Image 1 (cartoon, rainbow, N blue to C red):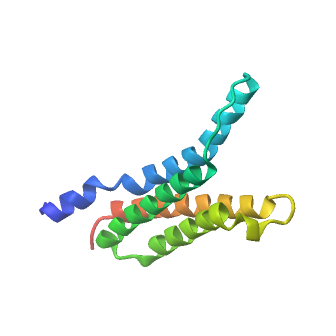
Image 2 (spheres, rainbow, N blue to C red):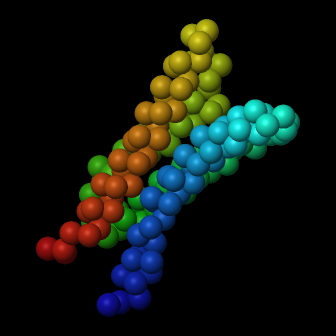
Image 3 (cartoon, helix red, strand yellow):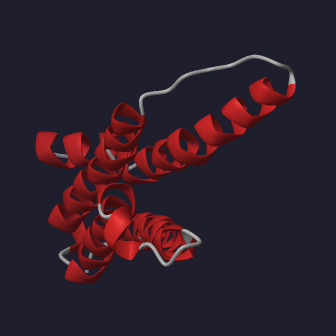
Length: 133
């Protein structure tokens, strides 16, 4: 095994873990704040830093899929990951433009983005596990 193949294989986990971290940063923080507020604890979180962390992890997931592209040369998982990261970014930063009075549109963009990131990470991982032709 060459050094390049070893280096790429060491990053097989990156897209999946970054996607999970993005999800955990979004919904985990929301859940933690909710639980703490039920216990009477007030936690103030800067929403801009929170959104930046979510988008950062989404971009790291795209980078992980891009590393997989180097091995399997299939652009579809990378395209899906980019679409997912764009949707997550839109939900975080353009939610005012997406508002319909209920916040539903932004939440749908967010969920669709996370679903696309997760699907891209799984698709990329499966493509990397196929034997080379």
